[in-house]
Image (cartoon, rainbow, N blue to C red; front, side, top):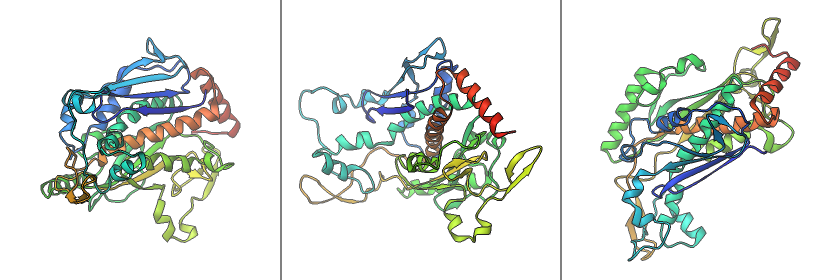
Length: 387
């Protein structure tokens, strides 16, 4: 069975649905494995009123029995508690009376292009699906991918390195143990002074009716070399990761390792020299490539950064045009957040997990997790991998 997933649902509809296929049988799973990441997605200073309403929990409706995966598709459902306040406007079936349409597209959102593409007159037909609420489903299935990867010795973490004009001090790639308290930071930043400055930046933007973007890093530890491939363009792991990150709402840039900084360096300062010892086998002392060379993992941590734009829904709306009258108007006012970069980093973890899980499934196969573990052990032995 190929590894794949899909999501369905609207922001204020009855609920969200996700289906993931291709995970092996025999994986041990508990509700908190999913719900923990759903709660982490709702963290972060700068979140709006929606987070006070939704307390996301996943209901597993297929593919798991008595805490173990069956190898069949796993279906998840996350109810939208806010649907009670939107039932008339978002009911799947006809309702009595007229429901007011939205004719005020927001600059920076999917609104205008979406109504043009699908022939709608009501922007809500677009904005409900385009909303980042959809990422709740991605985080849920990403949590399942993490369970699979964890069984193979892979862990994924994330942290925020910039919000607005505040940037955390540069340093070496954090180690896995450095992330022990990252979720205790209100902005999920590993540097305490930068974290405080980011909070102040968000508060100032909120008072000015503005929103803020930023940059985060997602890092995968414990990977073996050779995941991904150089053979075809769509097999290259860095390409898959870039697409996955850019598919997250509001992302405008992605980097692998030192990313765009590499463009300004000479070759001797851009690449990771290769060494060998009896104790470690092949190794590198630097990781400028972010753990990927030629579309394949090197065995070093895979480091992916994402750049998020400020959210387009503003409490002081930008100028727009009324779709019905074609007259100048202010864009739609909708409940919004001031900053969601900390949440975006958690979503990036999920997308990275889904890409890596798919690549590992291609490499290892196996109907049961024990088959995959046996294949991994044999592969490590063949290449002499000693970590």
